[in-house]
Length: 516
Image 1 (cartoon, rainbow, N blue to C red):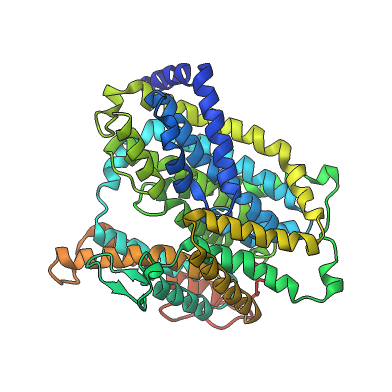
Image 2: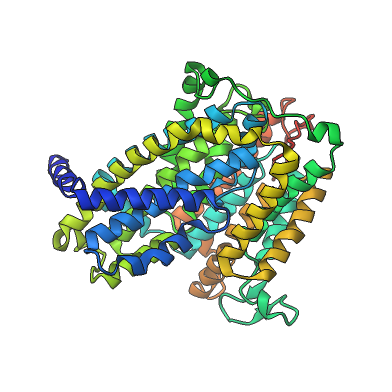
């Protein structure tokens, strides 16, 4: 530990040089803008800026590209809170309570808590990266297809508790998400499925189009349906002293931030879209441990603090398998792996010995970058909060323009815009019928990965389904799924819950959630 601290101090000596701080600042600013703009995401942002790093040394290049990654985690919450439009896929869950806080005139505290929670989670995640990288990376290698499948099954049971509507409706939305996820080329055989001869569907349905459609376009359509006098009502605009969180808000949020940090860091070591999964898991746990779960979906600050901390912590943890093992567990780190190889750096067990200045310099720059992001975000809270002063008859068309341009920038595809509008109409109908979009989105993200893991497991075992219970970690996840569902049924079966997946529990009058 002492040796790691000494190396970290040396890393700060590298990171605080003028040119490295400059590139860290550029990465943080660009990442924040990418997070705010719906549709682009850190993957496209990193890929687009890799050519700009060709003339840089490897350390400065990775410092800037890494800044884009965790900077996007910061920026993605802004439009989620203000406009109910997720700027980044990991910010989908922030829409649930963040947007409700904004509607109540508490956009300032929501934005500030996101910045503070992200800074705390990023800081703790960096120290976890320093001290726990080698042993945790080795533990992550124990995950095979069977373990990954069982983990996804647990995720699908957990997602039924993300929103406040009925279990049946949540599972129905999850099934629809799974079906949509099968469109495109078969991931194993390469055969086209459900494309109906359309070349545009060969690559599948774009997740960003679904997310922006369900949340952004659907929200606009829901507002347009309202009477003119309701539409012209102004959102509560906070007083200056209410633009930042109170001590009571901080007391409520701090435990959620710490729990979200731990959850995100653990999930960040697992292959897959870690920030997305971490936000859903954090939200579910916060609602479970809360003394007032009925407040979730109506503007609970814990529902913002926990998920936002989780996605930043997961982002930091994703660098462990990349640096120590040379294995990218998430799409953004796969792009970073390509950047490392372009600059002649081979990540893996020998990276720390062969390129100590890069490893420790990048880690130290992450702390500097998180501090820069905190300084960039907190002062602009009043500015962002005052966006809600814009009359809705002006704001709603701007949201449409924002969504369309953001969607087109992903693949330069008109087809994706039509898909977004189609799911916007679906999102509007789902609001009318009291269905939630969050389970559909999570199923769309995890479904293809679940299918691949399931089929790979059966290939390995030659069709023997016992592989899922013969491997200890896989068995642990399946048991956790069963225990969780039964515990959920018992907890809510005492008059406040719904039935568990495997039975048990009595009916309750559930609290519906609007304007998700």
